[in-house]
Length: 120
Image 1 (cartoon, one colour):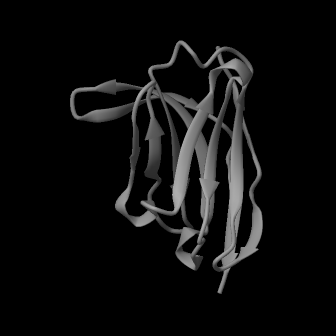
Image 2 (cartoon, helix red, strand yellow; image 1 turned 30 degrees about the horizontal axis):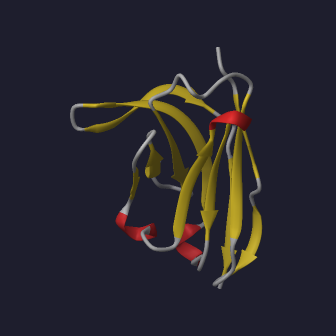
Image 3 (spheres, helix red, strand yellow; image 1 turned 135 degrees about the horizontal axis):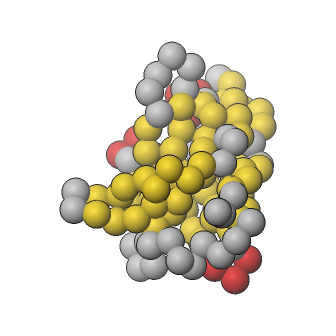
């Protein structure tokens, strides 16, 4: 089974940028879609961005600020985060999924998460 390992989290001031990486132990090409979720303290995990072979989708709160991309040759998915806000503070998780009726569906393949802290 493919394992996912996130990196790139850390502390940043509001307005700053971070790039998260998700390295897979095997090929991600077989997955129709990959996604990034986040979970803030005391809140439910939320889907932030997804990427298929030809399309990207973002939650409204990050549109225009975050960019998801994938490099199948490197088996890596990225999340470029710009203009960060304190409300972006969360643990970010990489996820392998597929596209079903209704949109992205997780295949329950997760990384361990990477913490992003944005200070005001």
